[in-house]
Image (cartoon, rainbow, N blue to C red):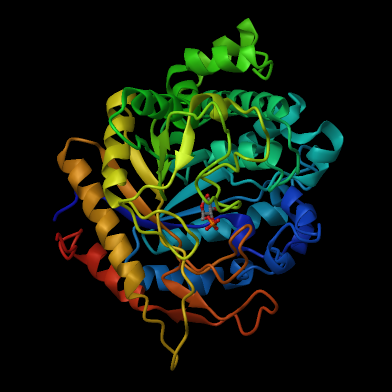
Length: 479
Ligand code: BG6
């Protein structure tokens, strides 16, 4: 199986999950620094204070990326490292850190892909304005974007605006499992609308300031299947796709919300307030490409009007399956009922494994929006074990092989996918699952309780991915 020439074989990370150095060199606190202090919110109260200390190990990690032959590295910038209070004075030391990272990547012919926002809002903006519930935060975000576009616009070609807006707004404002720890659907849809405006305005600004670059959001996409061919189940799946996917993607790519869902939210008095000016803003900020994060989709049947309980045994911290039994009358319970898919295996965390769903997802997104796609995340979280100095993660190789084969097939189907960033390069902090849920090609010697030696150890999958990159996909096993 061959991939297009210059395909960006990459890997991804996020600032809070790898950097550590949470208050070094002038960095201000983020909402995650504060939220992780609330007892019981994260596994074993783990946090990103040290994480895997990319801040001090970036040279070593980039050397490993170069050894692997990586063509692209997606990382995020911590907003409060650049603007410690979110909007005021620029912290030159913070800028200098990212400049060094970008230079080091480029020295090694690795394309930097820069995410502007991977969930770590400056705490100061949460306190001062109420975070994404306020339009002031849009102005602060634009100020932050301007600093980065100014400083790195001539170096970085690919930019991501928001990582998984669907996940951080839902978990943060609806299910209270992310900061700012709110459980209120009306507030969630309103905050989400504000983020949509910030996204569109940042894209507009980017197009003015960095005309040679490309920008787009990274969306956590999961195709939703009907459990049976009963028309009622099929309708439930159509609705679920609109609710889970189109609600965001239509706004990004078409500048408008899907009608059906907007009508429902209005009936339920939880719709966002959208002004005429807002509509113009959304229309004026369209992305150049879409980043797709793919882990799994879902399966639904028609809602059972008698009982609105969820049959699926949900993992309450799976970011892709919102914890629908917490609030009683929800839009979901009126549209669909989530069930397990009898055809799919699961990971140790109960996430369904569905490589064909990946091909379906890429096809659906492309045919609908006609934008180039890059996979900005895909990977397997597992309890890797270090034995005699080695990690045999054949299960990760199998997982990535199967998923990449489906990406290759989608490309043959005509979908312009220009890169694949595995999640993740090194092991890192899982927001709610601590350090035991490992995703990396490189094992990090640390656990939930101690940073230990932070030694970097190449896993079996490291050499495997190296071979895939070297042969431009030629070594993928098509079964
Ligand atoms: C995505 C996020 O939701 O999934 C990543 O963008 C995250 O930041 C990844 O780590 C895996 O999720 P989890 O919960 O297994 O860490």
